[in-house]
Length: 488
Image (tube, rainbow, N blue to C red):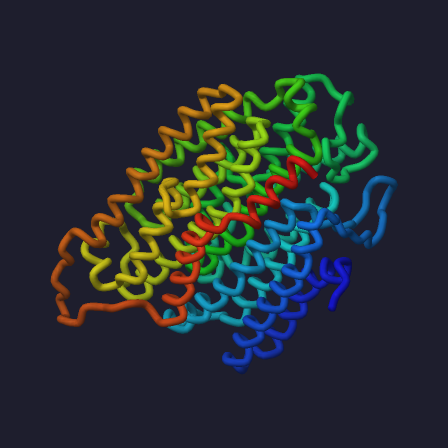
């Protein structure tokens, strides 16, 4: 059995070792993919070994080395990081199953590079999850950007390279122009960048300075896709669907909103921000992003583009809920990180299955597809309910907490945003489900109607759809971790 400190280091070492072994097995596809699955399962075991420790109140950590006083490469597992690590490691297994079916069915080129970069991205994600301070988080945040760039440009076409330039350019420019100066300033005035309960900036800045510093941090974390720094996300949809699932559910965007919540709670601190009134602007910007992205999704015919703008909207739920600085809304924000991950990966799995089996990419092409692909579209329907916030899908619980927090603080703008965006969510998801099951399919010109995608892909999307429902009935672990952030 590993000690908690060893398990933390293994969380990053295991996927790195997996990446090396996958590369060595490049001429043996079955072995290569077996290594991927074993690596993912081993990582999940390491993460699960930390869960009882964290739930029991311990916060294990390890310091690798110090660069300067107050600047360390260090790791510590707290409740939010524990939840993020569970999401990333758990969904990596399912995504790997799906990816194997996808790359084989679509005869993707450079499959070894695909799986290697995936493992490297998960290693960087675990570093973000376990970061003990903003400095360490920044390093792994950048590594995640660099390791996912080859995945975004995987197809090697001019369109893929153009999408990759937008992806890399926006994420690197926001982090270096905004987040890095904010990090240096925080270290200068506080003498540390450690994530600390209650924050590290109390009595150090006035209200205006706090709001400006928060803006640098939030916009510097471009992976949270807050408008106007969101274009990288739809641009990255040129990637294969398993990569889209990685970007939207497992790693990249979750790293963004995770980092924003960590900064609000553990760098600035609820009390400091509340007394200064420094988050009113953030509630408004996040609210605008929620509505504006929902409107774009409503008009998008391309399925992946619709899902991309849905993600932009859903991410800002987390940011707005955290910015309300209410205990109930923070619980909702933390829960939404988990439930959105499981629901959105299901939606992208379904989109990839439709493309693989039916070669359809547009919403307007989906008439009757649920009759030919009932498992896929049934899973899609369940995940869509979660995105809307309807029971018995887990999105209902996180939205309930966010709405309760907004009402408890009498923040009526946030209440209006949640209600209106829920209607918009229904407006762009339910027509897809209706088309799939209640509109007659067009006649197949070749007389050979398609069926479901390959079995591994169907198994993966069925598992995640089931997870969306199970989280509704059994939200205990993420709920307890969210509560521990409030009452450590």
